[in-house]
Image 1 (cartoon, rainbow, N blue to C red):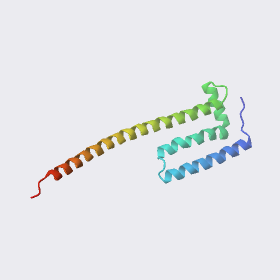
Image 2 (cartoon, helix red, strand yellow):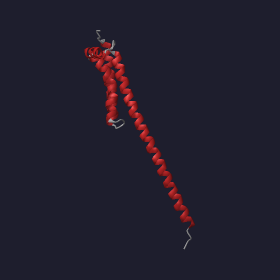
Image 3 (cartoon, rainbow, N blue to C red):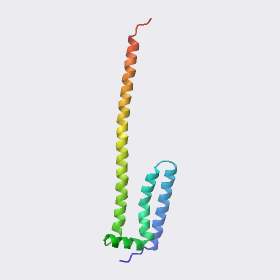
Image 4 (tube, one colour):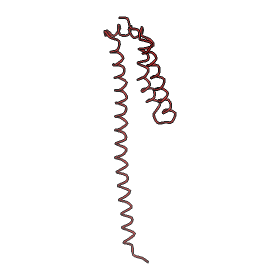
Length: 127
């Protein structure tokens, strides 16, 4: 199978990759996203870039894997990246939920202690 991308495809993918990676890098520098997330999200732009800029490698990889169309490898790689990101996001949400529960419990205990101290100070006879 011979696969060669058109010049329009090369230009559009290149523009997408440059803009997307620039935005990700800008957000990483501002600490909006983690460095790990930067690498994971940048892979979503690098995979299509490999397919456009190195089509012979992709065809060879498709032949090794045993699939007829190289774009199946592209979408499989993108799904893997998205699932890894989703898995990492679920872990973060669960940790945040546990932390919120712990903080709510601590606030309740502190509120109880304050109310108890106020009740004791209100019942104390003035000397």
